[in-house]
Image (cartoon, rainbow, N blue to C red; front, top):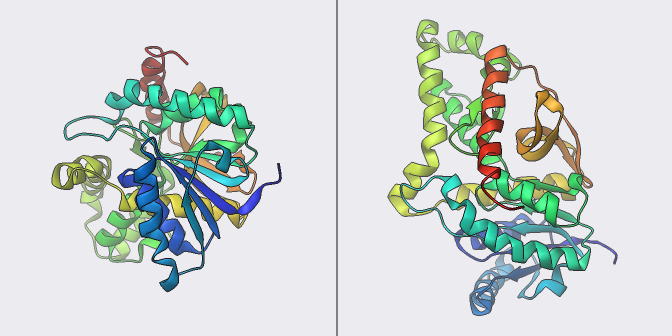
Length: 317
């Protein structure tokens, strides 16, 4: 079947799915969107509600459908899964969501979809690896939203700290999208100026920079927990991240994004999916970008991979 590059499918119409669908409607990237949910009426209600905004935004056909409707979609965004509860880690969700995604992957595999499969549900790294192994799609066309949102949170925090446009901040959160993630400070910069030098440029006490970096890294890592504690769920930030990733694919931007991908030898890591910078375009993951890491950062990445491997051993793929 021919891919319709103006069509997107959203599987799962909870907070994240509906917020992502709304953001995608406003983005103007697509002219057709099908929404799926185990609760068909929920999908119909969200599709109706979002459709009513198209008269004020962009013309778009939005409807609730079934798995036969996703076959020609350029991108299938999977947000379906149990919600993360206050005090619950992303990895606590694993057994619940593997059971949900088994049914989803079975349906996708039957239809031999040829677009991009974007996993957004948590724990995203485990579910991405599960999708790679069970969707029947080539691994370069299956990846997760990974630490795109974590990296956005990092850039926002650094921009606020240094009083500079966060879009001029270039830094990555890599590893697991979760508690073992970390900031790759060794290559962080502001428009090419090393972070150490930019701190000094803005009149910051360079001697306190390490403490500031630790505070910002912890703020970023714990942001989701804080938001969940305050409002029970996070969805606007990840919805914006979904649009950013879809834009890179549909426009064939070949953008470098820290998405969750399968590693087979890169950074000395095998048989796991986690986030490292990769070139994202119309065909999915074109290649990984081998950023320079310090010895300490390489150890952190390896430890993050081990955390995910240990979890993977406890479930059936």
